[in-house]
Image (cartoon, rainbow, N blue to C red; front, side, top):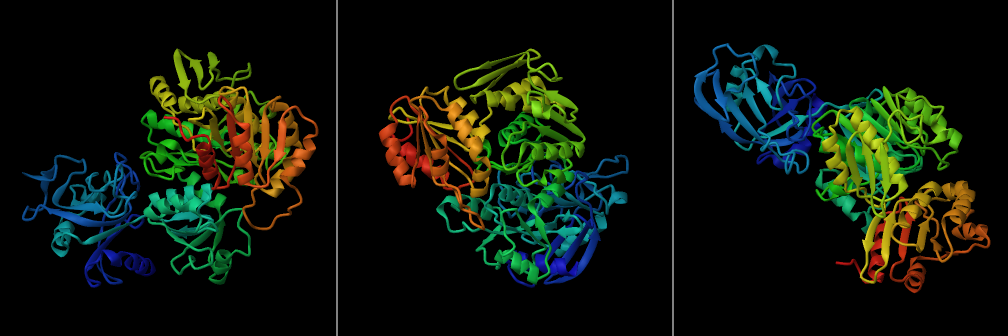
Amino acid sequence: MTVRLRRIYRKLQKYLADPDDLFLVHSIEAQTLFVCRNETIIERYDSSSSRFGEGIRENSFKTPPGFHRIREKIGSGAPAGRIFLGRRDTGIDWDGSTKDNMILTRILRLEGLEDGINRGPGVDSYERFIYIHGTNREDLIGAPLSHGCLCLRNKDILRLFDLVGEGTPVYIDPPPIVIGKVRCRSIHFTGIFGTGMSALAQYLRFQGIAVTGSDRLLSSDDTASIRRELEALGCSIFDQDGTGVSPDTDVVCVSTAIEESNPDVAAARSSNLPIVHRSDLLASVIASKKTIAVAGTSGKSTVTAMIFEFLTAAGKSPSLISGAPLRRLEKQGLIGNAFSGASDLLVVEADESDGTLVKYSPEAAVVLNVSKDHKSVDEIKGLLGTFISRSSWAAVNSDDPILASLPATVRFGKNSSASWRPDDEQLLPMSVKLYRMGFEYHLPLPGTHNLENLRAALCVCEHLGCPGLDLVDGVKNFEGVARRFEVTDTIDGVYIVDDFAHNPAKITAAVSAARGLSDRIIAVYQPHGFGPTRFLRDEYIAEFRRVFRQNDSLYLLPIYYAGGTAQKDISSEDIVNGLGHVSFRAEAVSDRDELLTRLKADAGPGDCVLIMGARDPSLPALVRKTVALFGGKKG
């Protein structure tokens, strides 16, 4: 405890009026409350936190982690065993007749000090009525007992009540997350602004884990909002020069994009700190919850969001780790790709691009489809087969013939092999409808691909016991995912659509959905990465020839380069040249200024400008400039 106390004390000093003042530390792992001064334990008491575990959400009945202070002292002068209801002295002493955990003797009401963790809407410890109090179940003290509060023996709460004052800091120390055999309470993320990394960073902060991070794009305007939201949760953000790796760091987390030469990696090596891959950290989180993991080469983010929102509508209060921000969560002031719910349900997006999918063992696996993307079809199919074998329950898309040979608990789709099928479906210009078991599900998103996404999400939510009426509301009110077919109607009458499409299958789906807006598509695509573009060159050419029509236009931006080592032996010009003679306009532009000039001359009222590309955080800024080019947002 000595090393741990030293770390806590360093962070807690800002809450102390005097460095020599007392403070309290409750260890959820040890079920012990420590009275401390400086880096010394003065007294210790057996204690009990929630039997439902640690968690931040209201109505979770879980103990919130992190920094608090004593806001109110209640019960002075009452005898040991006095019963309190609603923080009021009832005048009645416990007589041994009730075995339920009661609030006895004294109350120290806590106030959270960390925004988004234990202070603020939905997570506020004070509004959740989190106390330190005495209990009638002294026989259970030292083991999880409560509905969120910290319980002490009555003689101990009497002693503690006299020791502390209003304003005394209290740190509720969460248990560590165990990655392999490494116990972690402080994690440094190299490349923290990436969608997968920022989602994990937020989720762990919600659990009370300390988070630091660095990113190559630290000073970019395009990542300023992500940095702001991470820092608001208590994450410390550094330049990617190794300075963020400190003596307090337990482990450094990296993604496949981080090279061995990275300064953070070098700093970890020199300090003999463990370096773990993002997927190993996610695998540990998945194993700790009742996890629904969504996999497939297309639609993962949308289906993950649908399942999360539909479960929420049904009162299931899930948590979330996603690869894209949900618009509903963005409106709450969050980055949007992570959330901490009240239940043990967790919905995650399971990415196959780097082969790490095989590390996950979820409660439920959802497999959407297979197409050539970062890997060949056969490779991806093999990864999905292993993923399914490690899952307790699996829902697989019966309409994808490549998945037919993979095992499944249930198959969802339209064909005859599906055990979960809609009764009917309807494709509308800007929405879709699905009918099943007497319910009409009206989704406010267009495209055949969103019908496929809806089938998957409803199949899973029915399995988890969501009532049909709740699902009807959840589907109707689904707000979608950032950069997944976001439509802006401009003053000049040109539709601007922003979409994350970054492989041939996703481009086809986006173009198909855009036909519901306009007969004429002016497509802009920024290929992502030289390796992936080289790998998919022939598929791009074949799909572009197939989906674009006479009078359409296709503009290819230069390939997005995210840094690191890359063989730059392919360009957007190579793809355009490979198209040969086509009936539509195809052109590789040199930069975004040239693109905007072309768009202004090419697009007119009723046309749809479809901007596609992945990973590049500056693409939303390009979309905003395009909207402004055509008079701004209508209305």
